[in-house]
Structure formats: C-alpha cells, structure tokens
Length: 108
Image (cartoon, rainbow, N blue to C red; front, side, top):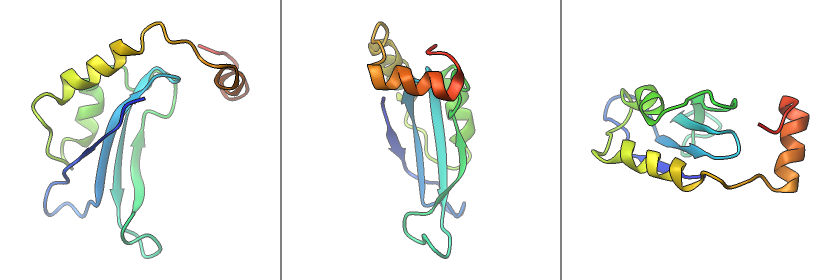
C-alpha cells in the first residue's frame, strides 16, 4: 500500500487530502477530510473512494477525485503507477485472503 498526503487547496474547507494504492483491493484510493464538531483537527472523510476491488483502476481516476481539493504534484501519477507496479506478483497473506473471501466472496 502507498499513501500520499497532499496539500489542500485554500478556501475549500478541507483539512487533509490523501491518495494512494491499495494492493489487496487492487485499486487506487482517494480521501478528502473536512472538519466536524467532534473531529475539528483530524476531520472526517467526506469523500472516500477506492474501497471496493478495482474501483479506481488508474492513477488518473484517483487524481480526478481529489484535484479540486488539493495541489497535485507533477510526478504524482507516475509515483502511483510505480507503487502499483512494485506490488505486481505480491500475494495476499493468509489473513488477507480469508478477509477477502468473507467480504467479497473471492480472493481476487
């Protein structure tokens, strides 16, 4: 798994923006956090995509989710692609495989 915390854009009411690659789910993910009364500093993920297998299949798909809320580094797409490629051939551990079977009915 990779995870990059991006710089939020001013004036969007966003505390934190996160993007990355989730090897077990074989998807990129994107999260946008906004403050709440209970969590004023950490915030709550009001946008969170990439929680289902293959949901965001490309770095570009994940970047599109967050680009209105964060500054996008020039090499982010390439870094995400590299993270995905580095995990090719890595197999799930026993516990990951069992969890996938329970959650999704398959280990793929």
